[in-house]
Amino acid sequence: MRNFLGVGVSPGRIVGPVRAMPRPVAEPPAGEKLAAGTSADEAVSALHAAAQAVQAELRERAAAARADAKAVLEATALMATDPMLIKAAAKLITAGSSAERAVWDAAEAVAAMLVNLGGYMAERAADVLDVRARIVAALRGVPAPGIPVSNTPFILVAEDLAPADTATLDPAKVVALLTAGGGPQSHTAIIARSLGLPAVVAAPGIDRLADGTEVYVDGAAGTIATEPSDADRAAAAAWAANAANLAVFDGNGTTADGRRIPLLANVGGAADAAKAAAAGAQGVGLLRTEFCFLDRETEPDRAEQVAAYKGVFDAFPGKKVVIRTLDAGADKPLPFLSDATEPNPALGVRGFRTDTASPGVLARQLQAIAEAARTSAAEVWVMAPMISTAAEAARFASMCADAGLRTPGVMVEVPSAAVTAGAILAEVEFASLGTNDLTQYTMAADRQLGPLAALNNPWQPAVLQLVALTVAGAAAQGGGKPVGVCGEAAADPALAVVLVGLGVSSLSMTARALAAVGAVLATVTLEEAQEIAKVALAATGPAEARERAREKLPILAELGL
Image (cartoon, rainbow, N blue to C red):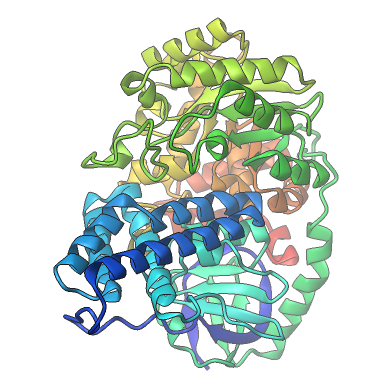
């Protein structure tokens, strides 16, 4: 029997056989030259054709993908014909290299550059290497790498997964996800949660298990064991029985003593919103507007934006829809708005800051949001990402007023916004905590890096202290102002209780997490949640905070959460 410990990122208990991702595309021989009889022009043409074929295939998959996966696939598709990559490869071909070796070396250089940039841009290196493998496969006329084909369900094991692979997982076949690398906020973790797949990341050595090895996975505890015991099998059976109940949310988020805590959904488009409404979401806590702008060389016009936003608003008549203005930059570069040459994009011109570098785009977006709101029955709130100062908050509120939008707010994603929440919330009507970014900025730990998973954890007492500071700043305003959470932390039922205990007024998450969070919240009074929050705040580290909070929530073990 062997035990593995990683970071649990999506709850669930399951027993099943593992299957590993296929071996990657083999590297072309070093120094491989153009084949005899093949000209450089012919090889460059073949390169362009292969890159375009890869892009077309990824876009086709994006068109049929879930809303949360669509943006991931579209971003990867863009990388397939990235001018920097293709021009560098073409130059190597002209110097005599084969097309396969040229694109391999060119991609290596681009990926290394992105890694050196750090932060969000380092994450894009995985996309480049994924695209490289796909282009080489297309040049060779062989199948591209992907999820194993199987007639029976299995637990997928990998060193890590490329975004394009993670985005197209079939939950009918892949019943759990284990990776040796990655982090709690990686694409792999986020999409596993949205699919409801038990998942553990950053589990060293797990990718060396032989295909067919039977394992027991506890996605909440982050543990994997070979040779499952009778107790393990019983736990998995109990989880399967509970899972059906945890998939249904009654649309009523409250504590045991009746304190109303609206449970909202994070969505990325109209189709996503319709599914969230069907799942019982009490509104939208985060509408990511990037879905309108990705894969575009130019800004979408007003009519296109109005139609896109209205599709989401109409799914929630009479309910709150919080829309985040364009969060461009860093890992979401846009040709017409962001600067790809920034030395540190995660700390660069992103979110609200792009209005200074490219004025006009935000004002036009706000006008489109206002027009869509006027023709919809939804209660539309608008928030700006990457707000750091009260002056920025005041400027955003003024822009919203000019557009006719009455409820401006801000994202609290950087420590300065939490520390000065009182001054910032004096300028706007609400705040929403983006715990993914708040955690990585607080701990100075890239959320995509497996080796930093222990640091990049929303249970960090420092992060919880910043949540408490934000709530205190909001409470100091006349009558108090609402503070919600729209980061991935809200989807953790135990952490959701802590957040409510800290004074958070609403929680927004992937729709699949609504029922589990609602079920756990309903078992505690507000006073009990406050006591659990005090215990977590007093901890010296994230593991202790999580363990001490979970000890006071026996319902978690009963439900397999």
